[in-house]
Image (cartoon, rainbow, N blue to C red; front, side, top):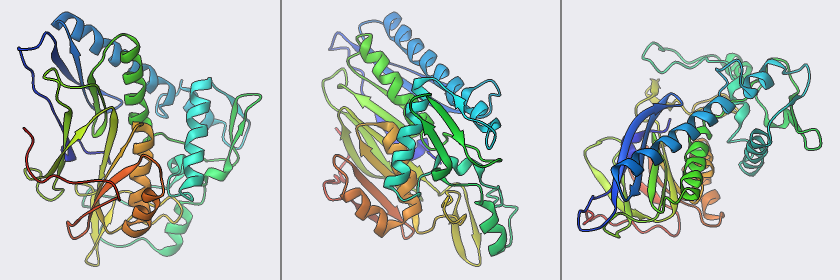
Amino acid sequence: MKNILCIVAFFAVSNAFSQEAYSKTMKLMGSRFDISVVANSKEKGEAFISIAQEEITRIEKLISSWDENSQTALINNQAGIKPVQVDAELFQLIERALKISKLTSGAFDISYASMDKIWKFDGSMTTMPSEEIIKQSVDKVGYQNILLDHKEQTVFLKRKGMKIGFGAIGKGYAADKAKVLLQSKGVHSGIINASGDLNAWGKQPNNKDWMVAIVNPLNKDKVFSWLPVHNQSVVTSGNYEKYVTLNGELYSHIIDPRTGYPSKGILSVSIFTKSAELADALATSVFVMGVEVGLDFINQLKDVECIIVDGDNTIITSNHIELKQNKHD
């Protein structure tokens, strides 16, 4: 779950400068999107926001598994039957997703959509599912069974009943694409915040960096730290609003696609890197890997940093993050 309350973008509008920040909140891809751009006039600002909105809507139509006319739905419908030819954009997105699956040894897997929904996080669940049921729930999950044909540009899911879904990277990808499009239109500064999948570029109208807050998962009114964000993406995943407690143990709604068991020991993960799509995938991966393995994994990656809040509400950071406890200017 990507939670907007765990990461807060801050900007100041100053009339001392010729440009101002214009913002709009809307529902896209089933989630809250906050789009902010710096422009010379309200008219231009609103026009740029509309361009971003149209781009995000276009991406949703491409990757939505709920839209029966989408290429993603067609791939799922033809699972175990035949390969499906897709646009280069979708083919490349799936290709990148498979690379992350290999990198994370399956902790990230877009075929998680094949998983049986045996865990309920609405308060109705009172007993743990049996080992056999849990094992069966992930029977059709496995990125190794997603076959790509580069020459024909086709995607084939080997097993009948397999499905792919982009819930763990779709909003990050949309934020990246909207940013690139706005930059191509001359927008030198802005923020796309897709329910906590944030991509920021440029500076505020007062020439200061955009700031993001890392919020205490157990107390949304308390900020752990403010961090400057310059031409960077930040994605936060949290389990503190969707979980189940069984036998005195808290289980997250983020489930390990390899085992079928919910992840444990982490309240939130914030990933800092250039691409919101990559940050999106890595945030989910670290949750599944756990604190020790996840932190070691991130520390081996170039230009990627993370902040983990563990089950005891303790902050753990990767090697090159310096937290500033004082508030922003």
